[in-house]
Amino acid sequence: MKLELPKWYDLHAHFRQGDVMPHLVRDHLAMGCAGILAMPNTAPPVAKVFENDDLPYWSIEAYTDMLKKAGGDKFSDIIVPLYLTKATKVAAIEAGAKTGILRACKYYLFMTNGVFRAMEEAGVVLCIHGEEHGMAAENYFDRATNAEEYFYRERLPRIVEKFPGLKIVSEHLTTKVAVDFVRSAPATVAATVTPQHLLYTVGHLLQGLKHHLYCLPLLKFEEDRAALRAAVIAPANTKFFAGTDSAPHAKKVTECGCAAGCYTGGIAPQLYAQAFEEAGADLSPPSSRTPKAEGSQDSRGDSSSQAPRNDSHGFRAFENFLCRVGPEFYGLKIPSETFTLEKTPQDVAALSVGGEHIIPLPLGMKQKTLPWRIVQ
Ligand code: NCD
Ligand code: ZN
Ligand code: ZN
Image 1 (tube, rainbow, N blue to C red):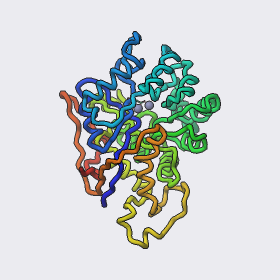
Image 2: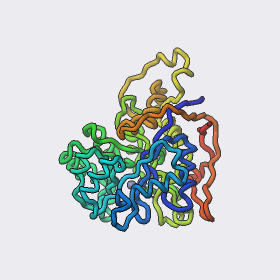
Image 3: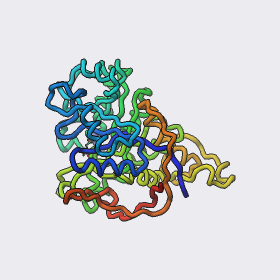
Image 4: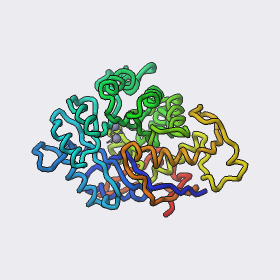
C-alpha cells in the first residue's frame, strides 16, 4: 500500500541550537515536511522579535537565520513563535506582526504578561502549553484530576471568553477533558496532537519505566487516548492537527530521568500512520479500494475508536490531520509537492552527533522497526 500525500507542516517541534541543529533539520526534511514551527525554548530563549532590540535573548530574526543555515532554507516556510516573558511589549507584538515576522507566541503558564489583546488584534496565534503551573505533586497527576484538566476546565475557558478573536493552539493534548473542550470551543481554538499521545498510555510509560516515553504533559489513560484517537480520525475534523513535539535530548539525560521529550524526527508520519491503524482506520487510498469497499459507507462522526472501523474515510481523515487542518489554521499554503508513505517495514536508528546519542521514540520502546516507511 502506498499513500501519496501533500508535503506537511510539523507545527510543533524543537530544533535546539548548535551542532545538533542540522541533523534535526535533515530528519524533518526527510519525512516530507514542507515547513516547521520551531519552538523557542532554546538557551537563551527566542524572546524578542528583532535583532536590534536590546533584550538579552535571541530574536526570531536570528533564530530563523540559524535554522535556514542549518539546511532549513529548503523549507518553504518556518514559523518561530515568540517566547513570551514579562518583558514582552505590546509594541513588539504590533511591529512584529506588521512585518510578518511574528506569527505566533508561545505561552508557558508561569509567565504573566499583557499582550493577548495586541495578539488578538494583530492576528498572532497563541500556542499554549496547557498545564496548570505549580500544582502540588498529589494534584498534578491525581486519579480524579491533573494539571492539564485543571487548565482546560478553569483557565482556557476564561481566556477564550475574554479574547474571542484570539487564535489559540492548545499544544500536545493528552486528556479527554482537553479534547472535549477544544471540540466544543469556537473555531478560533485548535490543537496539536503528538504521535506518542496517540500511540501510548501512562501504563506503557510505567511498565518497565520507559524513560524515552517521558514527555510533558505526561501520557494519560486509555479513555484519554481513545478520545484523542477519535478526534483525529473523525472525518469532519477541523481542529486537531499534527504537531509532533519532537524533542531531542541526549540519551544520558533521558535515561537518568532528567529530561522530558520524545524524539520523532524522520519518522513522525510513519508513527501517525501506525496510530491511525491501531485506532481502526483503513488508510488505503480511494483508488486502491475495490468498488465494494468504496461503497460501504460507515456512519460519520467521531464514534468510539475502540472497535476497528474499517473506515473508508480513513485515508482522507489521515491526510486531513497530517496535511490540511494545521496549515489551514495558520493560513499556510497546502503544498502541491507530495511525499509517499509505503506500508513496508523500516528499521529505526539512533542519531549520533558529537559523541552524544539521541534515541528515537520507537527504539526507546524496544521497537526496532516501523510498519511504514517514506519512499522518495
Ligand atoms: C519539550 C522540550 O523538550 O523542549 N519537552 C516535552 O516534554 N514536551 C518542551 C515542551 O514542549 O514543553
Ligand atoms: Zn509544551
Ligand atoms: Zn514542545
